[in-house]
Image (cartoon, rainbow, N blue to C red; front, side):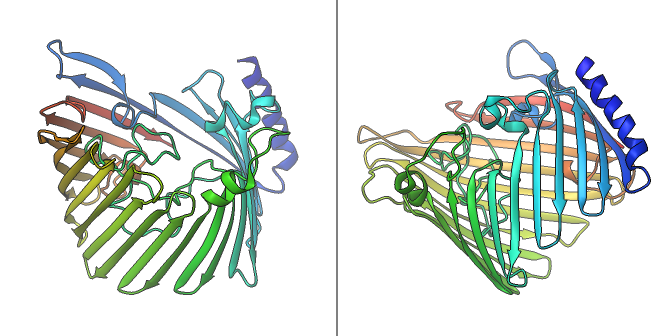
Length: 412
């Protein structure tokens, strides 16, 4: 508490110094919810938020963000109740042809574990745009969250990552309903050097990961640790078609994806594979889908086939995931339902396993209190969400769920 008071006093003093030059801002958010679980014999209730029970992050919390902006320079402090040792501060600068960001937990600032323990609070990266912004050269010790936007199109066949770590691609098939995969290009607090060339409709480049050791004085094997993990990618976009491809050197990791846009209809196909000829464990996934979204309502259906393992010890899965939404009140209220059917089988010790059938359904109501437009969780800051999730499968490997939750979001 004393540390927070010291920071607030410093900010208060700084206000008088900088007020004449720049602009101060205040913002924040609160999210509180409850989940009622009917899965067990005893009905239980617990505190929750929208992302906590099924995505594993985002506890009940409140936050205060204090920012100062002077031309291209931004400085900010984020105080959150999620952890009692979290006081996040950062600085960013966007000069147009170059940009940078540094962010860390101020309670841990300057400690030896800067490259280790508190990675969830760190950002340290910068980039240049060269030759009339045709080439982007980025260096990252802890990268920004790029949202899997680099060299990526349809992601129906992208590998899922639950429960593997960020760079573990050992589970390409769904372990939970509606798992959303990430391609090889996904980056969030990653370490790399990136060169990306943008020629109007064509974009291509290379990314060398882990080239900056996490600890001072550390080293990395340039061939095994960097070059064999290099990622090459490209994306071509010319309406009504876009295509993207990625190749990860050491594992023979391949991703292909494409979309076709025509009016309110979007169709997509994709493939992801780990095809190292020296490794008997193969990882492959093929999928696609079609989406119809004229605005007020929409529907989609996705399907995929995935496999993982060796020839005589392999798990396979077919997934079919339809869904739809309807903006009941276009300014305030959206109703959405997601459905999934999963057929999982394979071989163990050469013997064919019994087919496991699972299914899931999840209706939701999203209420935008301020009436700035109906939408899902990320589309508004103040409102309410009501959700019911039912997951059933014969073996329980996808996690049986029978739960109702309500969540309240506030922002300013």
